[in-house]
Image (cartoon, rainbow, N blue to C red; front, side, top):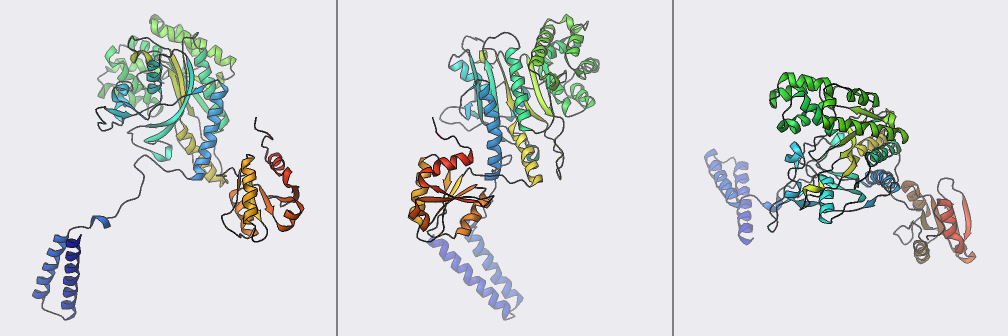
Length: 509
C-alpha cells in the first residue's frame, strides 16, 4: 500500500510538471519527453482495482420483485394453493440441486438446458430443471407407492430468456401430482379439472386445454414408417407445431433429422387434426391406426377420459390435438397443455403472447428408473406456468393503474397530541397480542395529519387514535380512513370492534 501511495504521489507531481510546462509554452520536445515520463509512471502504477466500476445488475434471465409485484404473486399463489388443498393434496419440498445422474437422460433434447455445478466434495451436482424428476426420486428413495402432493418451488433452465413473455432462467413451478395404482383416467381427469379450476379462478382470459396421448403418437409414428430410434427426436419436432407452421416442422424433420419426405407427409395427415370425442371415435375406426395396439389403448383411454371430463363439466375446455407432443422423455400416456386463446383486451393494454400457461401428463415409468428393483409407481400430474401468468396479471394492473396493497395492516395506532408515545406503544402491543395486524409511526411526536396520510398511502382502513381526553374516559377513537367517520370505543372492546370491521374471525380456535 505504501509503495502504491508513493507512486501515486510521483504521478501527481509529474502531472503538475506537464501542466506547468504547457502553461509556460515550453518546447514541444520537452513537453513530449515529460509526458513520456508521466505515461511510464502511470503504467508502473497500473489500475486501481478498488476503484474499478462494479455493474449492479441481476444475472441474465433473472429479476428482482418489488413489494407490489410480490403482493400480486402471493395472491396468485394463494388461488393455486387453495385449489390444491381443496383436492386433498399434501405438500413436500426437495433440494434445489440434485445429483447430476438423477437428472441426466430425463428431458430429451432439453437436457442441454440443465445447469451443472462445479464438483462439490466429490459429488457432481445440477440445479433442478423441474419438480417432477425430483418427486420421482423422492418416491423411489422413500419407497412410497401412493401420495397426492403439491410442490411450489424455483427451478432453473439455461434457456434463452424472453422476460416480457414470462420466460426466465430462474422461475417458479407449481406442481400437483397423484402417485399410485388407480382405475384408468380418474386421476387424469381430476388433474385436468384442477387445471381448469385454477385458470378460471385467476381470470386471465379464455383458455383451451389440448390433450393427446404418448401411446397414440408412438403408434402413429410406427404406422407412418418412423424408426424406433427416431421416435423421440421426431416427437420433439412435432411439439413445435404450436409455434411454427407445418412446412417448417416438415423441413426440420426431413432436412435436419433425416426423415423421408413421404413419411413426413403421412405424419402431417394426422398431426394437423384436432377436435373432441368424435375425433377419438373416428381414429378408433382408422384402418391403419386401429391396427396398432399402443395407439388403440391410448384412444380407448382418451374416450373414457372425455366421459369423465363431461361429468366434471369441463369437456368444452378440452381439445384432442394430435400435434401436442410434450418434448419431455418421461411421459408415457395422456399429455395435456393449456394455452390462452387471447389475453383480455383491457384499456391501454397490448396483446401479450405468453403461450402455454399450464401442462402435464402421465409418467408411469419414471419412478422405476430410480428404484433398484425397477418397481414402477404410476404417476400423473400438472404444472402451472405461474411466471407467464404473473406477466399477464402485472401488465393488466399497470394498464388499469390499479392500486395494489403491499401490506395487510388493519389499523394504525396514532396520537392526536404530543408526549403519547408510551400510550401508543402499550396499545399497539395489546393489538399485536390479540392477533390484530397493526402499525405505528416510528416518531415520538408525529403530526396527526402525517399519520392519516400514511394510512391513505398504504391502504390501511382504520386508525386507532390515542388522546389525553380519550385516556381519561377509557376510550379509543376509531376512525375509518375512507369515510372519515369517528367513533369512541371502550378500550376493552377495541379488539372485537376492529375484527368486526375488518372481517377477521373473533376468535382463533
